[in-house]
Image (cartoon, rainbow, N blue to C red; front, side):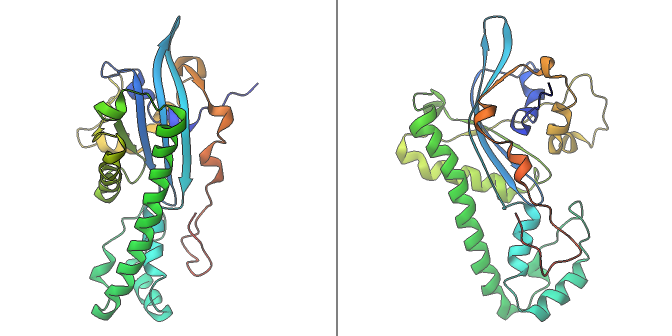
Length: 249
């Protein structure tokens, strides 16, 4: 039998095996190029098993870093889209994405602002959907609702403040439902990993890859994965060379 490890869990293996680790409920946002993966899970001990992960709920949406850029770009007239594409020369998801406002005409800014509001609304809906589902049905009595839910942020968009601020603002908005302000938790650098002093954030961007380097028995017992299809499997590949017929997902 082949055992698969959900990326939800793989991303936090470094934390679960570190001295920083504490048991309880956590929120995770994995920011990729095309998608954002949102999940909540419990980490606890059970009898002889030191690490038990229970996935409470998870969802995915096409709100990654490049998807946000494409949403902005497609709000512009075709001729402007072509002009900006040539200026930016973005060929793959590892290329940095400059601020599009530096390249557009002043009368086009309202179009970008409208696209941003639509994107923000849908991303907020995705985040709130996971939080409220867990609060209402999956784990309503968790002490973290009052103490503050620890938040992990990982993926290629780890360093982009927009996503960090969006998650925090959504939790603050939900304070009137009995949810306290959360805290961000940094995924620790593994003690056995020798890296350059400039590389910590790179490790956090690819924490899932680090977690997947472990054998299943080293990671721990994962519960709830069978009820949630591996969210990474439904990601749609974005073609960076054909912008016109590509939909972010």
